[in-house]
Length: 103
Image (cartoon, rainbow, N blue to C red; front, side, top):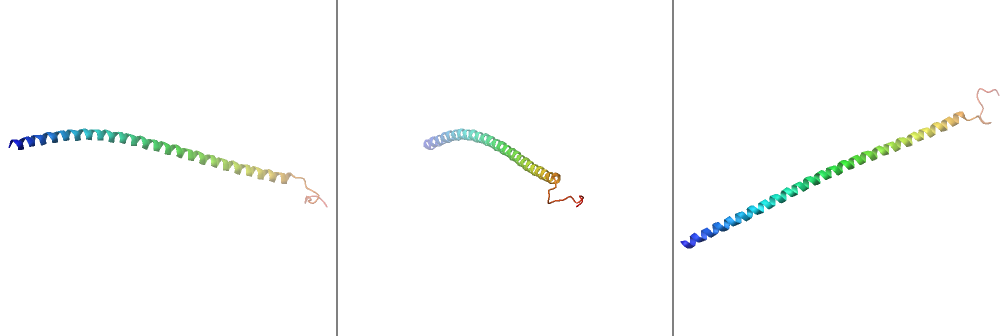
């Protein structure tokens, strides 16, 4: 009977010791989870900042492209108007007569 009683006490002590070890391990794991959670939150914020910055850069590039296209279109229109003005103000040549001039 003493043998069973000592065995039971030994098992109880061992279970108590294992319980304490598990409690310590759980605390360590909780700290690791907290650390990983903070790291994940930081990474999420960093990815969000990068995404926002890249979106802004794309918008800037789109505006620059639009500006260059409009500038090119404007220059083309200016060139067309100058050519038209040159044709209108050109002096008639020998081959072309003014319709209001007598023959």
